[in-house]
Length: 257
Length: 294
Image (cartoon, rainbow over all chains, first blue to last red; front, top):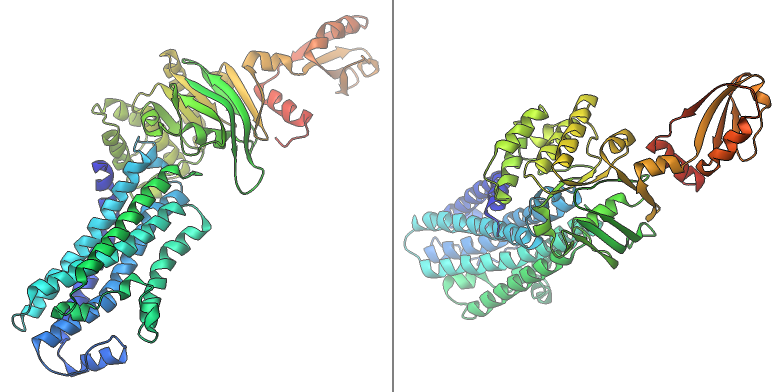
């Protein structure tokens, strides 16, 4: 890993991270604070987000709704958009416009370059989750005490789920960098996962084709998902395999820059 | 310093690429690398810098294989790309500072010297810079770490004549210190002033390589002859162009110069002058003789 390069990546991308952090804080706090309102639960039902229809002003239900929305919107939409943009900016765009030459001529090896970019991607997605976790926990605490441990587990598992898809997107960004298919694949695959997850509400099989659909975060928040650690390991394995493959493939890649 | 042996790099899309490229650049030498657009100059340079790996043959810099040892090689190279592209969100100075940190260079005096020399305003964002300003960024970044080898692709593209002159002076200064240069350029005057030897590449193959002097001599020589009834003079083996009633131009192969002059002496000659061949003439002759596009 190269520290000067990491600093450059931070300076280049912190504004995007900030925008997504603000967006997530706003959305998550609004959801957490509104989780018990009748209107909100009806809306959730309308959007087919799998929320329990019992309209009870109870902290457990609030946690359940917040975690459902968290998994449904925060992870699928906002954070996915963030890491798709980031995966493209970190490698594909740089190869496409040849500006990666400016880094490689400095003597940074391809391995260092790709590892540093991946570290930035992972740490920035982690930072987003950390912010979301802190904000939502503070908001939920206004209702009363809840199982903080399980709430944290939801975030850890969801973070790793996002990470596995982010690393797949990153792999496509690096392997297909500079090609016409590059941007389509790096954004298309995560979107396809999200679509499969949504279709999974109607045909269960689809749910199993996308990493997003493997864990029920509402059940997990309630502590009713005993196999969560298996999925945690699966997500970790996917991330690790995607990362190692990216490094190996990028090292061998012919760069027409 | 640079060694390329039977290097072949074909692009999957078609026939373009380089085929059996073979050349050596010794330490302390300045070599021009010339060819028409699409001849294979940039592809060769990409292989030298380790951005691409040839399917056949090998290339080495400082005795190290180019693709495998690219990061190590880069520290000893000053490189200017044909179309310089940088991380656009940075200012020129931020980029140069990044390079200096990444290269582990502690002394900034050379960098500041070059900024002053090229009258470069490094405080601007790169994306807002003109082509000439971006070229100055490339020049400072290539020379600031005092490398022993320079690979320069169109180094003065976008620079005004004054800056082009400054660049030539800088190259000559570095050359005097024993630095090695491989310069690809379409400005032949610049190559003639800085390089002793030239490699011509055509359709992905080395067409010829020789010293600038030999290349100029080995090409067609042109004599402008003034004589009474000049239009009536005909000499076998010479291509004649009548310029006026009393003046005509003869183009002959250099090897026929002796017989041409002997034949010419049989006529009453008022004056004769040799039209000086330039590297550009050599380039055009090479391309036009083989029906290529220059």
